[in-house]
Length: 215
Image (cartoon, rainbow, N blue to C red; front, side):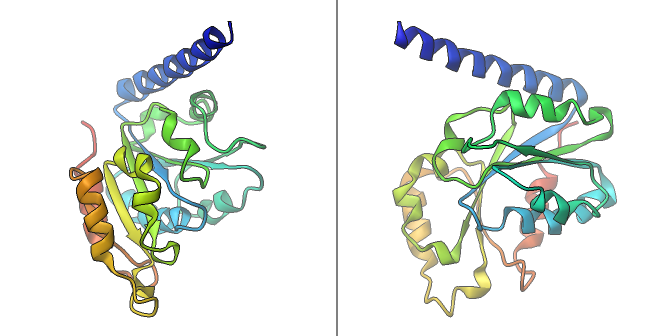
């Protein structure tokens, strides 16, 4: 009986994810699920990205956190609708929470929906939210072993951003280790080296993002 219950829960989650994707598809919205460990730079990436996207398109953000509205507040003045989703004790966003967040948005006025997932390198990977693409961030201070230690996170990525590259020299960071591990896990996702502090690598990210826009 317990197996059947678990199976039913997972099936219900997948059904809700498909419903979310159908809603987004009908509106022509590209949804991007952004995942990483806490502190990798998801909010900073969006702070840099949203103003550029808003010059030629429209976007909105769903922000997932256990508590507080601090990340949403950091993006509140960028001109894009922002919806905060607090999961309480949940270590990831669920399709049902994303569905409720979408209810607050006018999808006809959006080209990109950024979903900033809860900071976690394990739990969010297993749940389809209805997104079209997954972007994974890994920051230099986290070390060079995370791709090998958390392969499922990187296997599902459509793009991988190595953030805080301005610290690479000071930390004697070896990017080749990351590339070597990715060569055995995910060769289809581009690896982009970015630094919000120095402003490097963002053009590559923005060019990739522009190419994902749905018509």
